[in-house]
Structure formats: structure tokens, C-alpha cells
Image (cartoon, rainbow, N blue to C red; front, side, top):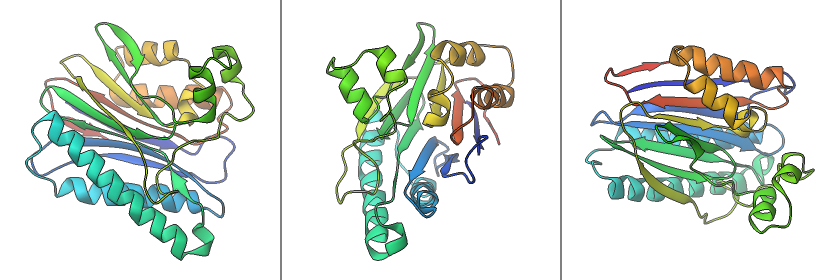
Length: 250
């Protein structure tokens, strides 16, 4: 398995509220995370940074997760714990009031990937059947789209596109989506913040991921495209390729 994580401030924002990474646990399995912070007075940095630090610590000390149902239980339990940590911090610190973060996290086992998400950071898979989005955005625009109130074209340029219906740390309890897919040799996972998915089309993502370039070159190309198309937001991604050689690029 090969993996790369990359983040970029973009062309407009004064600082980067995204974070993420790829981490190994005690048994040698990977957890990939992308988190996109939200909140005034730089509190988005705090929320996404706390989410990442907590999840990293939990995962690096995790053992005995061998099966998809164990991965699903682990993600549900530990994302819920992190939600409580962020929520209590926001209540105790006035400058962090109302802060939160999206999260998309994927655990890669021998032949499966278990994905959890809250908010509008996404996970895609490229495999022999094509390129598709695994996660559903927890956003106002996606709910309007799902209910048939607006078209896909309307959704692309909707003025309330950034309104989230769920985020990590904004409520005492949070719901998340969790699913498991088979992850086989030759498959590629892409986790990303909306700084990428709002700018780069799924066709362009698929073209880059299926190219002969190295993982680092693919990541750089995707970030370059998002910046080329405006770069109004922070851009963060993790790419995981199921291959015979084990390595992590940074």
C-alpha cells in the first residue's frame, strides 16, 4: 500500500484551517484523515487541529482491529469521543464558541476500507468499475439536491453551498456516516476537503489518479488545478493506493 498526504493554503485565504494525515497503528494498518475547520477568530484551526491530534493518538495506540466491523466500531467510538473533546473546549473558551470541523477518515485493512464522514469533506474511489464518490455531503445544498428541490447545475453555484448540516464539535452528540468497501490491488482512495472538490471535476480527478505519475505528482497536480481554478479555499487531500510496496510519501 502506498499513501501521500498534502495540504495547501490556496490563493486567497490568509491561513490554513485544514489538516489531516496518514498514520500507522501498532498492527501496521493505516488511518487516513482530512479535516476542514470552521469558526471565527482562527477557531477553525483549533477544531481541525484537535480532531487530528486526538484521532492520531487514539489510532497509533490501537491494536486488534482486523475486521471491518471492528473498524466501524472503532471509528464510531473514537470520533464520538473527539466530538465531545471539541464541544467542551468550545464551551469553555469564548474565542472558540461555535467552532467545529468536517472529518473524513478511512481505515485500510487487508482487503477493505472503512470510511466515516461528517460534513462535506469527501472520499472517492477509483477502481476497475470507474471513479465514484463514496460519501454523502452533510450540507444544505446536498439535502436540497437529494430531495429534488434543486438541480445538480443549481447546486454547483448555490449561494449557500458552504452551509453544513453536521459538523464535528458543534453539538454535544453527532451523527456520522460509516461504510465499508472492498479495497483491492490497483484501487485508489482519495480523501479531500471541499477546496478540491468544489474546484476540480470528478473527471479531472479520475484522469489525474489514473495517470502514470507518482503519488506525490498526482497530489501536486490536483492542488495545482484547484489553485488554477481560483484557489479560494484551503486544499487538502490524502491518496491511498493499494499496491504491493508499502511506503508513505509526505
